[in-house]
Length: 163
Image (cartoon, rainbow, N blue to C red; front, side, top):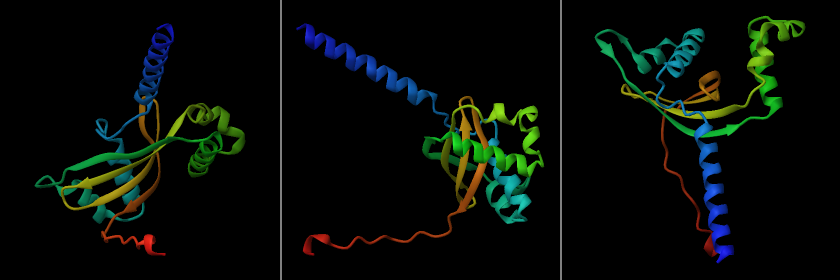
């Protein structure tokens, strides 16, 4: 009887711990602060791809589009990957290696970060998969890659049972 109670307590306790960890992973799907749309539009604008901005948000007050973001996956990244992101940002902002500590970048990137893939679909037919990095309590703090989804094809799996 004591063993059963102990097993139940351990099972309950471990499930509570696992649930707590799941809650800590940021989910930016609601995009309440607009960081996903702002990052996408900034990237499209920088690359001269304004047609995607119109497909994401619309082309004016009378032509508005809505979008929906859905998190596809989330994983914590390594310290080396955080360092790569920090150095990429430093290079973009022309911060020298000797100035990284005083700039505050080291503090920003010295915390758990999560690589998250989001599927963003607009009412105008734009489908995008974006690779964002998020921190606890801070959604979409960095954007690495944007993939435009243009077509869908049906997959085919050969029959391995006959080989």
